[in-house]
Length: 79
Image (cartoon, rainbow, N blue to C red; front, side, top):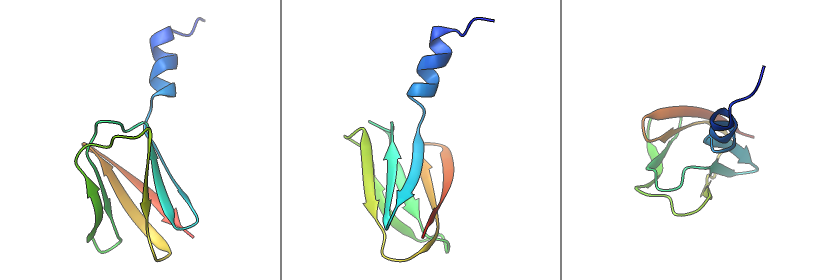
């Protein structure tokens, strides 16, 4: 069972969304639109084309946030 090089590259370049303190980080979303929503659906932040490997969004309150990167949605908890 060999691992295809393309499969390894897909994993290394996959979008990763995570929170540290009161910051939501989105990794590997360069040149993609990113929108951050709070748990009521209100847009907290939006960027039409992320220009960094890791894009950071500061949030003031703890809670559940939803991050949309292009057509894919992610859920992140800020503690």
